[in-house]
Amino acid sequence: MEDYVSNGSSNSCVKIPEIKFTKLFINGEFVDSFSGKTLETIDPRNGEMIAKVAEGDKEDVDLAVKAARKAFDHGLWPRMSGYERGRVMMKFADLIEEHVEELAILDTIDAGKLFGAGKAQDIPGAARCLRYYAGAADKIHGETLKMSRSMQGYTLREPIGVVGHIIPWNFPTTMFFLKVAPSLAAGCTMVVKPSEKTPLSALYYAHLSKLAGVPEGVLNVVNGYGHTAGAAISSHMDVDKLSFTGSPEVGRLVMQAAATSNLKPVTLELGGKSPLIIFDDADIDAATDLALQGCLYNKGEICVAGSRVLVQEGIYEEMKRKLAEKAKSWVVGDPFHPNVQQGPQVDKKQFERVLSYIKRGKEEGADLLVGGEPCGEKGYYIAPTIFSDVKDGMQIAKDEIFGPVMSLMKFKTVDDAIQRANATRYGLAAGIMTKNIDIANTVSRSIRAGTIWINCFFGFDCDAPTGGYKMSGFGRESGLDGLCMYTQVKSVVTPLHNSPWL
Ligand code: NAD
Image 1 (cartoon, rainbow, N blue to C red):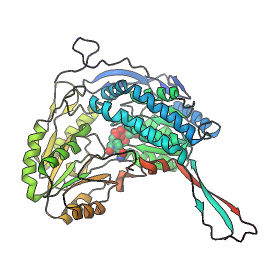
Image 2 (image 1 turned 180 degrees about the horizontal axis):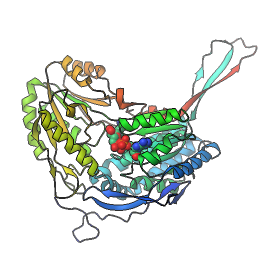
Image 3 (image 1 turned 180 degrees about the vertical axis):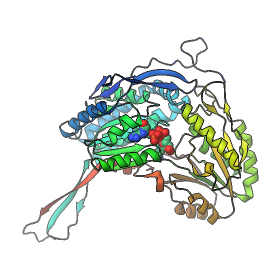
Image 4 (image 1 turned 90 degrees about the vertical axis):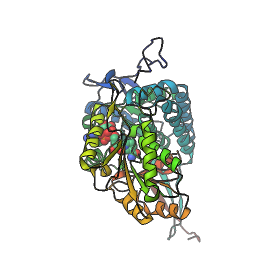
């Protein structure tokens, strides 16, 4: 494996730009942290430091919440027309498109994401998400009520207030905008805490938001660790709503903090162990490709990864052979290289966690079909790994590994597939491959998960709500359901005096 990027050498293909934004963004300005402390963000391609960024803590969160509170209680943003908010958001989207390359580089060096995917999907997707919600900003309205007595009533849909957004590292850009775009459209103000592992693009977005005309105090970004800055946001008495994406363990802490502070409502987008169910009548080559993409995309660091592949017994052996063949030629390496399909895991901790699950799978007696080892001399790369003949009770079949590890399992009947697919505490997504519409309909209605993909996987769209059943969380992101998470409904009632209309 070779480096595809260097800082200015003649064979360099992508030049890493100077890191421009490393402070906290509070009340429209980049500022140092109150303590003066910094944290290091690390390049997972080689384990080297990229930059030191300001490390926010309770005092910084306090300042950011104060700014957001003032902008909400007295500022222009919640009071301006939805149309005007939409215009600013459109400008924000245009600015993102002017900086696609630089932003994609930041997510690649910070998170190890494929540069090509960042340029083609994540960064343009952020602009699309902003425009989708910009278009909705002037269409947020309530209903006229049919009151049963002589009263007239209607509802107002109002912005929920100051929002605390706590986001993970696996899709630094996408996660940022899934939260920021609808809450901006609704007229909320906010404090965003990016993951301590991937703060760079969030700070760049803060800068662009200012250029676009988002007023001071509306969008604040506080980098920092979860147990300090994150906990300060969750327990803050002046934050009106929390939107959290991350692990179930931390989701529980966030919910507890909300409960023991001001009882703020919480949206939780948590983990998954999604099944991809492949029936005997599926096209085997297409199913093989889909299964590999579904599990290995973004090096398996994706909450909806199809990490449990259930294959019907008639095609199981052939699929197993084809999966092994294709996984062996899966290209792992520098995520800047256009031919590479899989970059490094986000950091040493995640790398070691994934390897410990692989070890566990071997100990549990699952058949290691392919992979199972780290690769490369530096950085946090792991070969695509497939265990076959995995049993439902094994740890690798139950836990979210969040790495390039597939559990391949055999099933007999439709009922068997449904029961096994549902035998998990998670319920984020599921995929079904079949040509039989009755099977597709039956299975999609029987699986307890927030998203079902039929003959596709990762069918995301701004208009399609995503979210969890069971321990994958509650609330929705994307679509108009995602916008509703940032509004609340007020009923307004007046008496109808002397009216013949009841
Ligand atoms: P994590 O739960 O460790 O961290 C998520 C965020 O919470 C980070 O910003 C972290 O700093 C912060 N945090 C940590 N401790 C905190 C605390 N005590 N109080 C407040 N905030 C705290 O998760 P992660 O490792 O960053 O991300 C991986 C997890 O995220 C996986 O479980 C994955 O499935 C999940 N995820 C879910 C979705 C979804 O949409 N459902 C999307 C992406 C990732």
